[in-house]
Length: 256
Image (cartoon, rainbow, N blue to C red; front, side, top):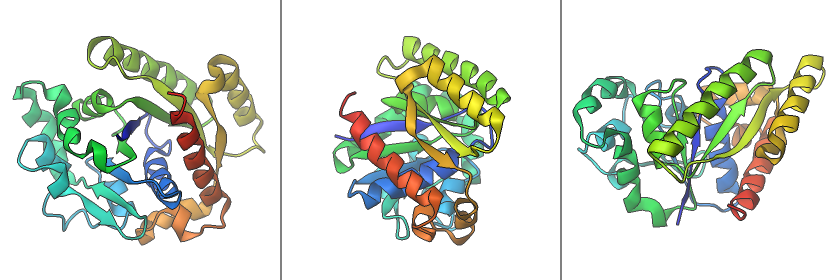
């Protein structure tokens, strides 16, 4: 049965989508069956996986409103080796439409049930806000992976996110927990980043993943080619780090 993880952070520009794409591809390289669900109306995980969001016949929007199933809405990323439930701008209107649905926070969880045995990992790329879409992701997940930059404002955003996760855990999803904090776009030459990294380890201990994702231009270039960074340049530091992160995730779920 699949383990379901949200990749979430209320702060934008912290590498959520880069992490979603490259963790999916890294796990696929390690012979794991992976489904990536794009819950962001921008559809960046979709495009970065080599799937044209403008051409898809069915997306996560149709899944949420009950017009289609995940099995009929998934596409295979040839470049990444994993399956994707795509997103596009149709999803932007879902927030308003879903307000009138019964159990609107758990629509995604119910939809995922039919494919739980088809995958080892289901990853959900959430938008950068605590919206109804993000809430659906949190209600469906076993845990949250939090990518974050080691900067001062990131620490403030982290406390808000942890409080939100606690509220969802208490009221909607008792299984939800923070799986770990992933340090991304890390530059050891910057003293502040090293200091914040040390603070994270001091306060969160083993909740901080040992893998660190370095700032890497090859990871930034890859989405424009519709290819995950771990495939675009498998010898780059960023690619190697994400494959190592995939291996760490496989080990970590054994202890959950």
